[in-house]
Image 1 (cartoon, helix red, strand yellow):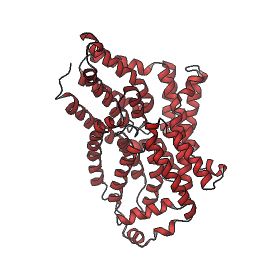
Image 2 (tube, one colour):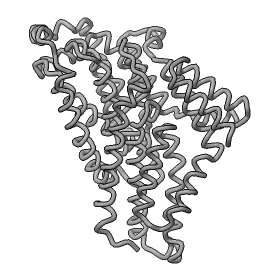
Image 3 (tube, one colour):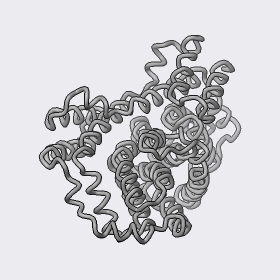
Image 4 (cartoon, one colour):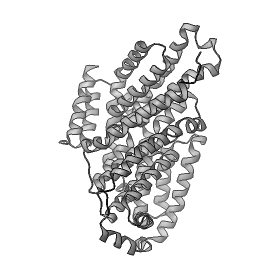
Length: 440
């Protein structure tokens, strides 16, 4: 286990130091895991979440085609004028919209769509882009926590636990609303002066004509029809067992044909740097999972705590949150799912095992652990730049558009938001599932 940890640690330090290109560091680190035989190459490729890769590729093609029509400029001017140039009001509106969209599309799709608009809005307002973009990533993860389809960890948990869309919405959306409100209020308050819009910028905003931004109306109309079909595919895809990545990739290529865009031009719209960075991260973390690191951590938790359900929930919430921040929430959830099943079995073992109890009684113990895992992984993914795919995507979009931010800059926003989210989630778990419940 020491070898994979060493390679991961060196790679991680190279990435956060920003002295080496982060994509090159991640891919070389992944290659080192295979070359030194810490993981077979078949297992390395199996670690790559193709649904995320397909989703990103397809949505980047879609956004690239729509951006050339002038749509995003039109939306940016429209938003700025409706808020009368008030940068704080726009920030609150964008973050709220991002959270809601992330719940019903997914957080990666949402940031690919909203980040370019956000950059244009900040340019119009003449305010710094970085605070908007970092908070956009954080709120996409907060909003995505609310539903089964909002964040990849929830999709994994739903598939293995048997919990459905309505149960996720009923049990997690109250926690998300509490977290979102508690985080958004101080952000709005403390942003009043730093994000003040210059008076001359306000005048230009109110005098602008958004309709002049549309430069390819025919392509825009055709593209919006395809985009509408893609959104319907996202909404219905789970019921039809069609992954979002397949919908996005197919939709991207259909839009390419309908809008008369060449394949070479379409491929130039894909942020291949982001794609390969995520592939490298998936393989790096997969090697640690292959070495048994996460199983060892999970087993130690279960043995140390025993049968106190609230402590088990807190351990799952906080440990999954911390590990998600460091290693990414998708592999952590994959590692923790069997651990939660083991915890439930061990809880009932002294009383004759789970077979001695009704399914309802077993659910009474199991469900709080599943909700703790979902909250810990999704909200813990906000902890660092590499905790969630949405964070990485926003960072790459920011870099491409001349508004790059460092690992340390992201931490200045993410750490307080993540800690507040985890504390609120801990209280929510206790009040809703522990304090007033009689357990078997």
